Image 1: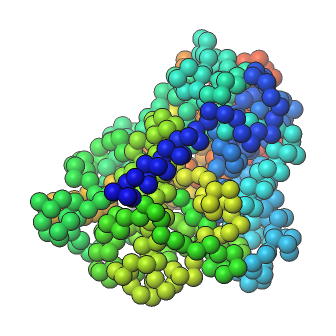
Image 2 (image 1 turned 90 degrees about the vertical axis):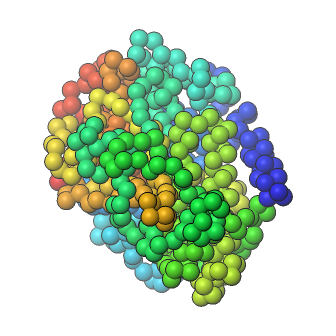
Image 3 (image 1 turned 180 degrees about the vertical axis):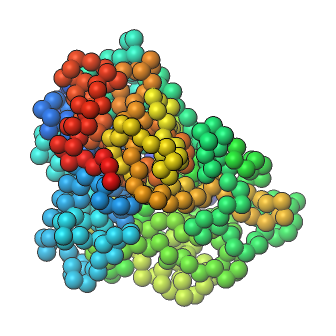
Length: 554
């Protein structure tokens, strides 16, 4: 009961922080503002898009619902999902070059000598001396680079400004005229870019979108929809484990986090959304370590399923404590029960701001509780508890948020249904792309979507898919455009038009930055021509993208 009361208190406290006032602005006051391009979002894609507009000589304003810029790239995801780094060009490559320069300074290595760090990346080296890029980094280093970019290009940033999703988007004959935030600020522009993880501007403008997984039959795919029995990555239950409170007794009820519903027929579509988590930045350096403590709302029964996993012999807790500089980690999910809070993300894409805060708080509670469980519960093998005792929160990361990431990993939310839908067939090279504005190369990677009870009475996870493209693939210009009849001056480089499983590859942070630059380029060309975005000849866009260093083919 005390835990529930504390959770309610925390929720009320967090809801009180919703944007009823304007804080942390670095832009002048006033109620009405205008620019050539308005970018809504504080993600890595948003910042890169803003820089591109500025480089092309147009006025841009960044309207961010976030206080901190950079999204996941500055929010804990330092173990970059690069794929083939050769197809990462333009301003995106420049971002990683700036990180390289940051770590060339000995002062950047406060807790570890550069020579001691090693050079391990995700399929690549962390520090690429030949190409002068750095692919693995601390959250604070990434944020420093993003802040330097908006300062260098004198980009006005309005922080913690939340779009009025009910009546804050003025559209006339398919053209967005202005957007208004909950604080009452209004922003007019000739072109708009929605670079949020949620696609709130896109949705509020009346653009078509979807949430969840499509049926395989819709786009002729194989890896979309419900994927019961498909077990990739090792993030599933290897042993037979009972889902019931009293093992083997259905009448006793099910353990937390397990669905009692029908998982769905294989290959059919559903409303479910893959799991979210926080990418935690932990450290084992004693002088920079903040101890993991028991959360006031801790409930050990939330982790009973993990007790049974340990009892089955599983011990791979540290499989995704990926090393980043200065004795820190980017902690990701690993195994059948992990930081991925399976089944708790379904409502997030369409939720109100208040409901999203509630979901974020629940994820925070779950993950902090998981850390304490691994540190203290007698059911956890002694050697794991001992190893966990060396880890804690990084004292110099997320310092204004209790050393906790300020961005939840929204792996997927809304996806636009636009002029062209990217599918697994484009990703796998089965369909050609005629008008590329960037390239991707990472695995089609969907995290688990649900935890259900099999017909044999044991628990299993579903939705974790990992299918590798043979080669880097092209991303079509039309996939970042709404249907022309719906909107002619909006571009969507993050919640772009693609199927669930194609998004599993495209959703990587470097690709979002690449598409942000391309979206900005197209927006400016449309302004210069006095036309809608759909009327710009692709060849003109292609020429400018290549001039700016974008990579459009192998």
